[in-house]
Image 1 (spheres, rainbow over the protein chains, first blue to last red):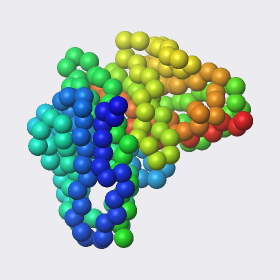
Image 2 (tube, rainbow over the protein chains, first blue to last red):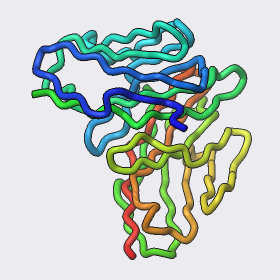
Image 3 (cartoon, rainbow over the protein chains, first blue to last red):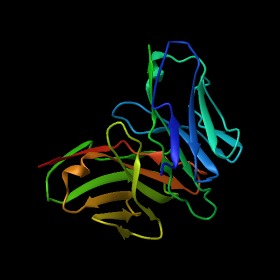
Image 4 (cartoon, chains in turn red, brown):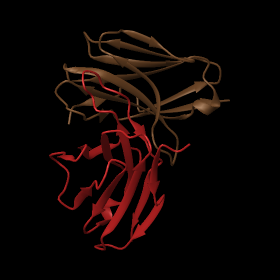
Length: 115
Length: 113
Protein backbone atom coordinates (compact mmCIF):
# COMPACT_ATOMS: atom_id res chain seq x y z
CA UNK A 1 0.00 0.00 0.00
CA UNK A 2 1.32 3.43 -0.90
CA UNK A 3 2.41 5.32 2.18
CA UNK A 4 3.63 8.57 0.63
CA UNK A 5 1.61 9.64 -2.36
CA UNK A 6 2.50 12.42 -4.75
CA UNK A 7 0.21 13.98 -7.31
CA UNK A 8 0.51 14.46 -10.11
CA UNK A 9 3.35 12.19 -11.15
CA UNK A 10 4.06 14.41 -14.15
CA UNK A 11 3.33 18.11 -14.36
CA UNK A 12 3.90 20.47 -17.25
CA UNK A 13 3.65 24.18 -16.61
CA UNK A 14 4.49 27.31 -18.52
CA UNK A 15 7.26 29.67 -17.67
CA UNK A 16 6.00 32.01 -14.93
CA UNK A 17 2.72 30.18 -14.36
CA UNK A 18 2.21 29.17 -10.72
CA UNK A 19 2.07 25.47 -10.03
CA UNK A 20 1.25 23.39 -6.97
CA UNK A 21 2.49 19.89 -6.24
CA UNK A 22 0.85 17.79 -3.58
CA UNK A 23 1.94 15.11 -1.17
CA UNK A 24 -0.08 13.00 1.22
CA UNK A 25 0.93 10.35 3.71
CA UNK A 26 -0.77 7.54 5.58
CA UNK A 27 2.01 7.09 8.13
CA UNK A 28 0.93 9.84 10.54
CA UNK A 29 4.49 11.11 10.64
CA UNK A 30 5.25 14.45 12.25
CA UNK A 31 7.85 15.51 9.74
CA UNK A 32 7.36 16.10 6.03
CA UNK A 33 10.09 17.13 3.61
CA UNK A 34 10.34 18.52 0.11
CA UNK A 35 13.40 17.84 -1.99
CA UNK A 36 14.34 19.00 -5.47
CA UNK A 37 16.31 16.55 -7.59
CA UNK A 38 17.80 17.46 -10.93
CA UNK A 39 19.10 14.95 -13.41
CA UNK A 40 22.09 12.95 -12.17
CA UNK A 41 22.19 14.88 -8.91
CA UNK A 42 21.40 14.14 -5.31
CA UNK A 43 18.11 15.27 -3.78
CA UNK A 44 18.45 18.77 -2.40
CA UNK A 45 16.41 19.66 0.68
CA UNK A 46 14.16 22.68 0.11
CA UNK A 47 12.32 22.76 3.42
CA UNK A 48 10.55 20.60 5.95
CA UNK A 49 7.73 20.76 8.42
CA UNK A 50 7.87 19.47 11.93
CA UNK A 51 4.16 19.36 12.67
CA UNK A 52 3.14 22.90 11.67
CA UNK A 53 6.57 24.34 12.29
CA UNK A 54 8.06 25.32 8.92
CA UNK A 55 11.84 25.07 8.45
CA UNK A 56 13.28 26.63 5.34
CA UNK A 57 16.76 25.84 4.05
CA UNK A 58 18.88 28.98 3.79
CA UNK A 59 19.47 28.60 0.06
CA UNK A 60 15.90 27.79 -0.96
CA UNK A 61 14.66 30.55 -3.31
CA UNK A 62 11.64 32.62 -2.25
CA UNK A 63 9.94 31.34 -5.38
CA UNK A 64 9.32 28.10 -3.50
CA UNK A 65 6.68 28.04 -0.81
CA UNK A 66 4.96 25.30 1.13
CA UNK A 67 1.77 24.67 3.03
CA UNK A 68 0.82 21.94 5.44
CA UNK A 69 -2.88 22.22 6.29
CA UNK A 70 -2.91 19.03 8.37
CA UNK A 71 -0.71 16.08 9.31
CA UNK A 72 -1.47 14.13 6.16
CA UNK A 73 -1.01 16.72 3.44
CA UNK A 74 1.76 19.00 2.32
CA UNK A 75 1.95 21.20 -0.76
CA UNK A 76 4.80 22.71 -2.71
CA UNK A 77 3.96 25.96 -4.47
CA UNK A 78 6.23 27.39 -7.13
CA UNK A 79 5.07 30.93 -7.64
CA UNK A 80 6.81 31.74 -10.91
CA UNK A 81 8.50 28.68 -12.35
CA UNK A 82 11.61 29.25 -14.38
CA UNK A 83 13.27 26.87 -16.80
CA UNK A 84 15.80 26.06 -14.08
CA UNK A 85 13.04 24.74 -11.84
CA UNK A 86 12.43 21.76 -14.08
CA UNK A 87 13.26 18.80 -11.89
CA UNK A 88 11.92 15.86 -9.95
CA UNK A 89 10.28 16.97 -6.72
CA UNK A 90 10.34 14.43 -3.94
CA UNK A 91 8.23 14.38 -0.82
CA UNK A 92 9.34 12.40 2.21
CA UNK A 93 8.15 11.81 5.75
CA UNK A 94 9.68 10.64 8.99
CA UNK A 95 8.91 10.35 12.62
CA UNK A 96 10.29 13.22 14.63
CA UNK A 97 13.76 12.49 15.84
CA UNK A 98 13.32 12.63 19.58
CA UNK A 99 16.44 10.95 20.94
CA UNK A 100 16.93 8.99 17.73
CA UNK A 101 16.62 9.61 14.05
CA UNK A 102 14.29 7.47 12.04
CA UNK A 103 14.35 6.67 8.36
CA UNK A 104 12.62 8.79 5.78
CA UNK A 105 9.95 7.38 3.52
CA UNK A 106 9.88 8.83 0.03
CA UNK A 107 7.09 9.23 -2.43
CA UNK A 108 7.52 8.41 -6.13
CA UNK A 109 8.16 12.04 -7.02
CA UNK A 110 6.57 14.55 -9.39
CA UNK A 111 8.46 15.27 -12.59
CA UNK A 112 8.03 18.97 -13.38
CA UNK A 113 8.58 20.27 -16.89
CA UNK A 114 8.62 24.02 -17.57
CA UNK A 115 7.93 25.14 -21.11
CA UNK B 1 23.68 21.96 4.42
CA UNK B 2 26.32 19.53 5.52
CA UNK B 3 28.72 18.02 3.04
CA UNK B 4 28.24 14.37 2.29
CA UNK B 5 30.11 13.12 -0.74
CA UNK B 6 30.88 9.94 -2.63
CA UNK B 7 34.25 8.92 -3.96
CA UNK B 8 33.13 7.16 -7.16
CA UNK B 9 30.35 8.50 -9.37
CA UNK B 10 30.05 5.27 -11.40
CA UNK B 11 30.69 1.63 -10.69
CA UNK B 12 30.37 -1.37 -12.99
CA UNK B 13 30.47 -4.92 -11.65
CA UNK B 14 29.90 -8.37 -13.04
CA UNK B 15 26.79 -10.18 -11.95
CA UNK B 16 27.57 -12.32 -8.94
CA UNK B 17 30.48 -10.19 -7.77
CA UNK B 18 30.40 -8.10 -4.62
CA UNK B 19 29.98 -4.32 -4.87
CA UNK B 20 31.36 -1.69 -2.56
CA UNK B 21 30.06 1.87 -2.65
CA UNK B 22 31.79 4.51 -0.56
CA UNK B 23 30.69 7.75 1.04
CA UNK B 24 32.57 10.44 2.93
CA UNK B 25 30.92 12.91 5.26
CA UNK B 26 32.20 16.03 6.91
CA UNK B 27 29.85 16.67 9.84
CA UNK B 28 31.51 15.25 12.92
CA UNK B 29 28.18 15.51 14.74
CA UNK B 30 26.50 13.12 12.30
CA UNK B 31 25.01 10.22 14.18
CA UNK B 32 22.63 8.56 11.78
CA UNK B 33 23.26 7.37 8.25
CA UNK B 34 21.05 5.86 5.60
CA UNK B 35 21.75 4.21 2.28
CA UNK B 36 19.14 4.66 -0.42
CA UNK B 37 18.68 3.00 -3.78
CA UNK B 38 17.07 5.04 -6.52
CA UNK B 39 15.94 3.53 -9.78
CA UNK B 40 15.27 5.69 -12.78
CA UNK B 41 12.10 7.75 -12.44
CA UNK B 42 11.40 6.60 -8.88
CA UNK B 43 11.85 7.98 -5.40
CA UNK B 44 14.72 6.84 -3.18
CA UNK B 45 14.16 3.49 -1.53
CA UNK B 46 15.54 2.77 1.93
CA UNK B 47 18.14 0.00 1.98
CA UNK B 48 19.78 0.06 5.38
CA UNK B 49 20.68 2.47 8.14
CA UNK B 50 23.26 2.68 10.88
CA UNK B 51 23.62 4.75 14.01
CA UNK B 52 26.90 6.16 15.24
CA UNK B 53 27.08 3.77 18.17
CA UNK B 54 27.67 0.94 15.69
CA UNK B 55 30.40 0.31 13.15
CA UNK B 56 28.71 -2.44 11.17
CA UNK B 57 25.20 -3.49 10.34
CA UNK B 58 23.99 -6.25 8.08
CA UNK B 59 20.84 -6.74 6.12
CA UNK B 60 19.82 -9.08 3.37
CA UNK B 61 22.83 -9.15 1.01
CA UNK B 62 23.88 -5.71 2.21
CA UNK B 63 26.31 -4.55 4.85
CA UNK B 64 27.00 -1.00 5.95
CA UNK B 65 30.29 -0.12 7.58
CA UNK B 66 30.86 3.11 9.48
CA UNK B 67 34.28 4.49 10.33
CA UNK B 68 33.76 7.55 12.46
CA UNK B 69 37.46 8.21 12.81
CA UNK B 70 37.82 9.04 9.13
CA UNK B 71 34.16 9.95 8.58
CA UNK B 72 33.62 7.23 6.03
CA UNK B 73 30.65 5.04 5.23
CA UNK B 74 30.44 2.13 2.84
CA UNK B 75 27.74 -0.10 1.43
CA UNK B 76 28.62 -3.63 0.46
CA UNK B 77 26.29 -5.60 -1.76
CA UNK B 78 26.94 -9.31 -1.91
CA UNK B 79 26.39 -11.34 -5.08
CA UNK B 80 25.28 -8.32 -7.07
CA UNK B 81 22.31 -8.90 -9.35
CA UNK B 82 21.06 -7.02 -12.41
CA UNK B 83 18.19 -5.69 -10.29
CA UNK B 84 20.75 -3.91 -8.13
CA UNK B 85 21.55 -1.54 -11.00
CA UNK B 86 20.56 1.91 -9.75
CA UNK B 87 21.97 5.05 -8.20
CA UNK B 88 22.93 4.71 -4.56
CA UNK B 89 22.94 7.64 -2.18
CA UNK B 90 24.12 7.99 1.36
CA UNK B 91 22.35 10.46 3.59
CA UNK B 92 23.26 11.69 7.02
CA UNK B 93 21.71 13.50 9.92
CA UNK B 94 23.22 14.71 13.11
CA UNK B 95 22.57 16.28 16.44
CA UNK B 96 23.18 19.70 14.90
CA UNK B 97 20.90 19.24 11.88
CA UNK B 98 17.51 19.13 13.52
CA UNK B 99 15.25 16.86 11.50
CA UNK B 100 17.17 17.44 8.29
CA UNK B 101 18.81 14.75 6.20
CA UNK B 102 21.51 15.64 3.70
CA UNK B 103 22.38 13.54 0.70
CA UNK B 104 25.67 12.67 -0.89
CA UNK B 105 26.42 12.95 -4.60
CA UNK B 106 25.38 9.43 -5.59
CA UNK B 107 27.03 6.46 -7.26
CA UNK B 108 25.58 4.85 -10.34
CA UNK B 109 25.93 1.08 -10.13
CA UNK B 110 25.71 -0.95 -13.33
CA UNK B 111 25.61 -4.72 -13.09
CA UNK B 112 26.90 -6.50 -16.18
CA UNK B 113 25.12 -9.81 -16.82
